[in-house]
Image 1 (cartoon, rainbow, N blue to C red):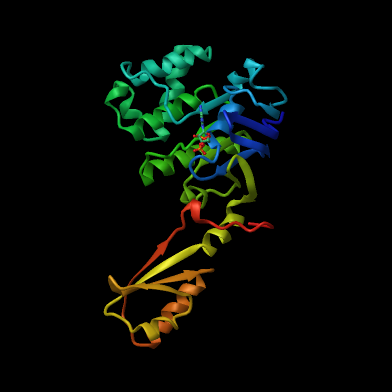
Image 2 (tube, helix red, strand yellow):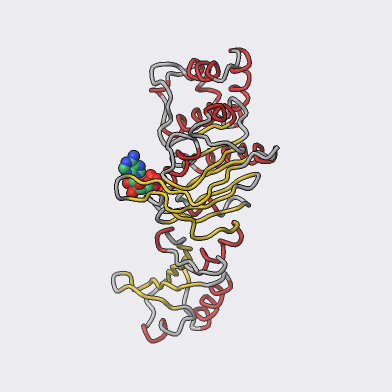
Length: 304
Ligand code: ADP
């Protein structure tokens, strides 16, 4: 059985705005990241896949059926949206029991499975707390637990680590990695570039409602590097004539005369700049890698 999502020439408009614009996308088993800036159409696409929105044009099939007209498919699929859809005045356990019943699970199974998932997310201690008492990050974990309760075949995630610290994000990635190893399908939309570089998976880049690149984490990495900068701080100001000759020199800043920004294409470019500075007897105080923003990346047409 293929747990697949097939989208062909999909269009979804709001008035004159085409939020999804002739978009085609076939999922692969495991993690599919859809990366794009704000307003690119990521959430709209997920809502179409979840059957909340009907396409204006094109076709969309989840495991062979149209999710808008075939509600049955929604029991096989879970959607973690950007609003967590939890009941604030119920405790976590009651929330999960409620959703478990919607999935036709008995309470004992729901509690057992919830405890197992929350333990992996380091959130078991909140089981008896009211949702309104929880931080945004913890609510995000509870919502993910709810999405995983029914062991879905397809999991749709809208920025699942948006409000989490590094450790919590890591626990979510680990859990999702386990889930994807069962050959199930995850469609994970995000605007966080650093998220992409932590997973080894397929990555499709979306902009203005369309997929503009379809690659993998490692394929994308060269684009990220090509658009990256490094800030080098020195112990004392360096003459502009010398700075200009640093391999990769991009700019210096009169307000910060000790700092130089260089543009890199590969990591060894950092070494070349440092070698040059050391040769000129400059003392390097710090080297900071500046990851580009998704909005500023320049994509090449053939290959990422
Ligand atoms: P993303 O998730 O990539 O940030 P969205 O899918 O939320 O992008 O939005 C894509 C575009 O569609 C945006 O310009 C947004 O303002 C617009 N949009 C999204 N939902 C609606 C809606 N329900 N009504 C009108 N416009 C919408």
